[in-house]
Length: 237
Image 1: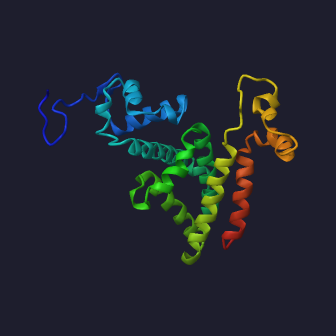
Image 2: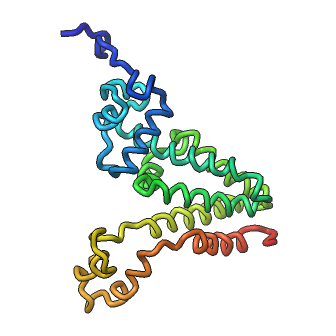
């Protein structure tokens, strides 16, 4: 048996895989790719190690637990949102346009990584503010700073922040909710599995499910954001 020191393995697992030496960014990018292709349930240290061509033990230097890896996926999502916002910064304008742009960027990144979106609820609910990744804290800070820049007084800022975040996250969860029952079906009703829902018990749901299955897109998102900003900002112009 290999010698151990303080309970840690005597042999250090190599962190050089098929894509070169590991880094936190590379590990999180690979985790995001696995989840995008196969869903959250497929993600494990073993599966991620196979993706990167290293032993699973090598990954614990970059994500010490499964929870840390899930938090890393949230971090990767918010990092991408920050990159999108930085790339489009010159096209937006003042605080109101920036707040609108933040909502649209978040929606588009979420649309690209729908399997990660549930973590925006589960991890934010279970991870205290001070322990969230810096990429997440930067977006919290950014929205609060934009509200201040738009003239929202500090006592009103928490209410305004909660209203905007509630609409944005709620919209994501409703718009990206799983609806398709059988992707191979060409008939919309069978694709959604409406035959499983008793028409006499759920007439409205049966009638409107095909429309609910369609994405609302940027337009419905920004309609809600604009209505909120009209009420929240001192200057609606």
